[in-house]
View (cartoon, one colour):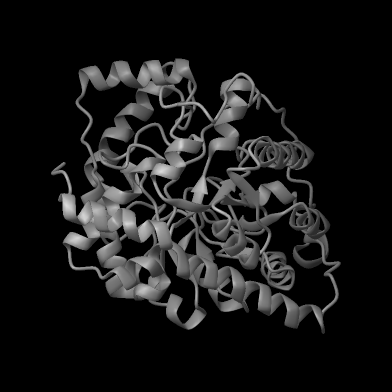
Length: 416
């Protein structure tokens, strides 16, 4: 990767001082669960953790991060009450994280609270639940997660849920079922953002038809540049202006670079041969991946690769509908120049070199995501005046049992 110019880098850092990054997705909570059982004494994030994690407090500051959606992800192979319990444990960790570092972090449940945290020099900490399995097909559970502070729900993860299709599973619902539509409507009533990353294109289109509030893609890039199912087709990007939503470009190398996607396919076979899940990021799994990399050179995506996606997404959706969602600590490898959460100045410097204005970059980093969150809050205020909490059930609307299955908490799948 060609280093950014000194001038562009200085301008990027100055911009981030006034318009810091709202990052749509960081998997630190699950990484901490795997690494240390959530023990912040064992892994103190006030110290340099670059040998273990993509994220610590000093690197967040160096990267100009002003607000972070912490993913309270749990693996899709957890289901039923086990998924709900694990999600609660993830939420508990985020709250413990904020309590541990009150001078650096502030819990934010609204756009105004995120603005206030920035004014105080603290990183606004928001939460997003990654996958509809976390609510176990229960709108009451959805409401409980909202009360605990969760401000977006990714409708699916890597597997379908009974009421919505995932991008990486065989289609079943054809988008959303009737209950899936009700989930979206109830999220609108609550003010919880509908996150369409991980969903199938049919689910994306269906949710955009149903949603009365702007949606987000918390960590997805452009499918036109890399035909990966985790990315967003152009026709869906083109729907965002009418909806008002935001697509937050991700940095996961196999999502942004077709060469890396091909390498990952081979690495996945290698992991499977050693008994590991394709998304496992445990030390033992990483040892297998690094050994494979020694035999088969891994292509390296760069900050310029991510900038290519942002250029295309701006062309299709417009500057008012872009953001960033790095997916740090949810992926085994990262692009050169975006090695960890300190890398955002490199991306902004790259975009400045391509002619992006500082006003456009301020929309990308801060203004667009906060606008969407505030718009969802306003829609919720209006809907709550006329709409009671939904008592709909999966069985009642779709004629199937609402229990999604039960599995233990031993799963160590990664999150990307």
